[in-house]
Length: 174
Image (tube, rainbow, N blue to C red):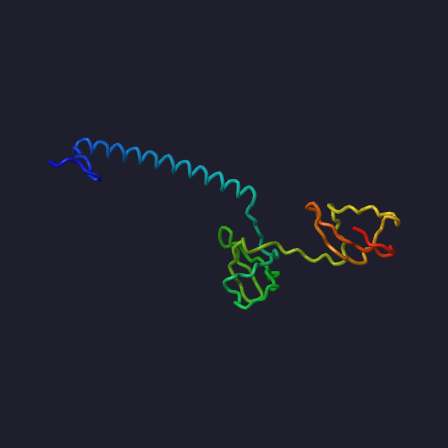
């Protein structure tokens, strides 16, 4: 035998190598099962959280819905301001999990719930209270300034400043 050189491997005894390989594959199988169990738990928790945040919408026959325009069936030359929702359409019956038979203006179609939303009748002449809006107090007349013109702009010590002329005041100010 020649001495071992760079890149040569030492001889392997067949019995020791077989035992090591068997142990390796047994350990690999057990770790695979452990990883699979952990991933299944992670997916289950994520699914529960998604279902909690996004409950399945159930429509009854006769309800009116709007249908999102299907991108696959759109013309390629649609404009930016084209309508995203069409309708109203009437729900005829539930076909399967998350799918409904809907009567549209063209025909009866099976539509997934992800492309549907409830149709709300217009509130003709009805005032809708905006709970998040509170009226501001009016400013005293002496505090009102009406901007006439912005004359210049500058940056001083990292802050933006504008030279402005207010209506009714002779001199512009920064």
